[in-house]
Amino acid sequence: MNSIMITTASALAFTFMAMISPAQGGEPPAFIQETFPEQGVEAAWSSYKSVFLDPDAALDTRTKELMALAVAAQVPCDYCVYYHTRAASAHGATEAEIREALAVASLIRKWSTMLNGSQYSETRWQREVDAMFSGQ
Image (cartoon, rainbow, N blue to C red; front, side):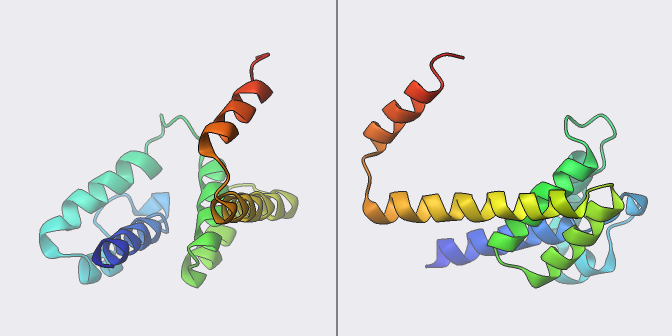
């Protein structure tokens, strides 16, 4: 139970850090300074900046925001959904792209539920997936 709570808290802390605008690259925002353990604030902020604010990152901000929105919807975190919807739009995501990101997230949740709940053989599933992509 404690490990689930710690994992959930870590995921939420990371999601909240993703809510910062690139214009805020200097000092950590107040909500991080006021909620994160003091000894970890700088490391948390540095980690955030290295992923979300690096101009040489492999993924563009629009893509990251669509991914963040899909994850936030599954967590679920109302604060994060609100922010990442606005941020995705601000970075050029269309309403159709936002809906599609949410549909993808819901399908992943659906099939995870079906496969896990049915206790479908993981070995059999891996063989099926490997066969689907064997021609590539």
